[in-house]
Image (cartoon, rainbow, N blue to C red; front, side, top):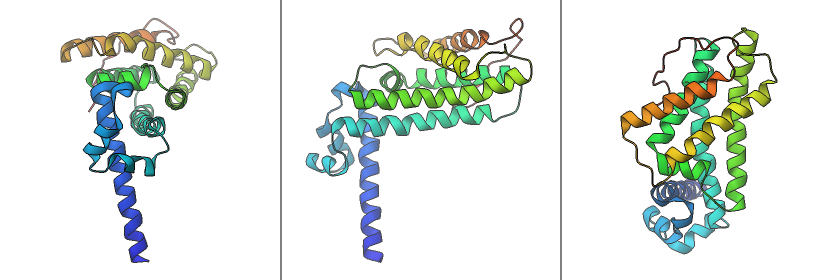
Length: 214
């Protein structure tokens, strides 16, 4: 019925506004200091209304992490599915992830490393696994093409993903500041080092591009 459909659309729109407001709050101050009252005001709802849509603050933040993380996974997936050698695409994927993280350092730090509630940490582990799955697809292609060492693709992807995410923790820390040039330099170093562990031969000559960094 039209009235029921309109009500559902309104509820969905309000829920989306709350999630977007929470994302902005986390990007400003991290999980711990992003307060529900601030989020509610930013979303244009009463503080108590937030709990009509989410069971708890941690539940809301887990949804924020899931949504933001999926966008990052989609960026990596698009690079994996693009043209070029597996080695080049691996470097491109890591570089894009690292540079995007450096451009949104506070939010990326919250997604990857900031201490948080168990619910958020569980969502974070799913995020890392989803990223590793995309890298594993690329590793299999590289092994088949003779570009990468012949190892278990899932294990290799876990190692590579862990390496570039761990390497970002320091540069993304809230107290760390990096201009655009420094961010690109850090992203380049992380991409080169993390990808190098899979190369079968000496590191090929690869160029770092801005694919997926918009």
